[in-house]
Amino acid sequence: MSVSHYSVYPIKKYMNKAFLILLLTFCTAVVFGQKNRPADTAKNKPFVLGLIDEIQSKALAEKRILNIYLPEGYKQNDTTRYPVIYLLDGSADEDFIHVVGLVQFNSFEWVNQVPKSIVVGIATVDRKRDFTFPTSIERDKKSYPTTGHSDQFISFIEKELEPYIQSKYKTNTSKTIIGQSLGGLLATEILIKKPALFNQYIIISPSLWWNNGSLLNQDSKLSESAFNQQTTVYIAVGKEGLTPTAIPRVMEVDANLLAEKIKGFKNKNVQVYFDFLPQENHATIMHQAVSNSFKFLYPVTKKE
Picture 1: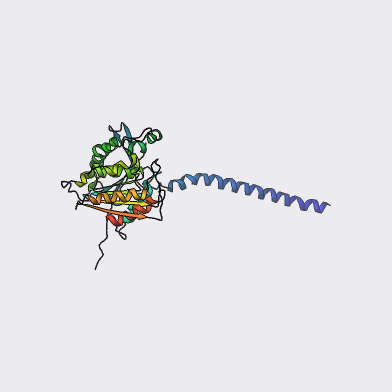
Picture 2: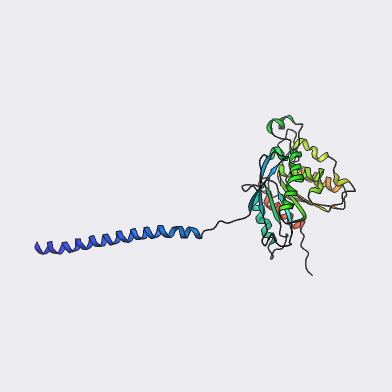
């Protein structure tokens, strides 16, 4: 028994020492780990896609947020100037990020489909208010109580936004507008009423059903011989079917009617492309249509 007693005690003593060593090692690791953590965090940097700007609008009586993408190599102090792409529904959680991705990719030197461009995403506040003109349809007046103020938004674009962008950023004379759905309706209204505001129009699944298609019946400055600005219009629509109207209309038919209307003006300065994308619907068409539009708007000359 005495032998057993003296053999157990050193084992217990050893185990206690081992436990203390492990405990101290763990505490040291925790302490040093905490000290090193801020240094690790400091290595992380935000991924910056663009910048956020804002403009105070008198026409809209509010501040508007602008998401701005500046192309690679943009420098404030050199002489290079860039085309501008104005994007409706340009909030960060709408179309800004994926459209900028398309612009950036297509402007890579190994793709070289699109010239390096500035993208101005106009963040949405109330698209039903900003993108629609007054309607005579009572049901739509009730469904969209803030509707009918596109004239103010167009004034904002013409008299405030474009001059602001041109004065602050290094722009050239090329101006493109991209609009889908109600945004496509607004882009169409600008094309019909004030076509000189942009020289390239990307109109996707336009909501031409608004006010029972009245925009399709309006006269346009495009039909006037005095309109001599070189203008390119890309119109896309998917397999989208009936419109949300009391009187049935078909999205594909309306988009095609718009293309034919513009072609009917027979203005040699206006070029129109119509793109039917049967694999896409109203929800999925935006990305594919913008990608396609670049091939129409910026045709690559094949080398011999």
